[in-house]
Image (cartoon, helix red, strand yellow):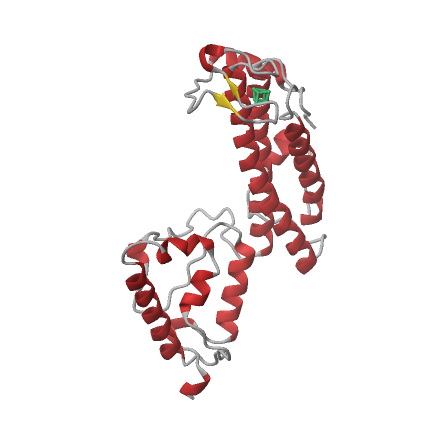
Length: 281
Ligand code: SF4
């Protein structure tokens, strides 16, 4: 499986043909405790890095953040699905004879079961850790070294994404290589606002399947609710908002009190609509 330098010659050819362009947002580097270092006019920092290399280093950091996010998600999903369905659960992506194109191209592994995806994730995680280590001060001599690693990190990211896609497609009843898969409307216009709406942000389907299972169990489709869990300790929404710093602006800005009143009104309406309060029996 390709490691840190296997594809470097090829990367260098690509980078020579398509040189990256940087638009630095600031010339001051604060990436280690030797700094801050002013890199204006390409003056070298205390570690010997110049502005181009520092930008390439920051770019690799961004690529690794993306790759880590997808890999962490992929690993979590894989753990969960193996626990639920067993590591022998077969990979099933429909009638396609090319089941895992990215994984096979990059790693040479041809997974047959979801358990086989574990060795792919091991490879991805090893690569990410190795690349993170190269961000340590003084690890690279030239921008092109970081640029090559960024290409590799992007490739690894796609491997991790395919692990997630293939695992969830194999275990959940998702469309699989079906030519006539219907298009799904998306966006605010596709929401039926006369019904309760659950919004899930992100693309980890494991959590969503639990919501759907819960809805099926409690016959909550088409606005029909059979059972609800009552709220024992009824507290004002202000208590929940105060506990989360992302809502602190509501307690500082002009008109914040009115916003909180509106949120409380929505909560009261929902509580009444669903019969959530003990006193409403
Ligand atoms: S990484 Fe180099 S340039 Fe940046 S703060 Fe540290 S010594 Fe200075």
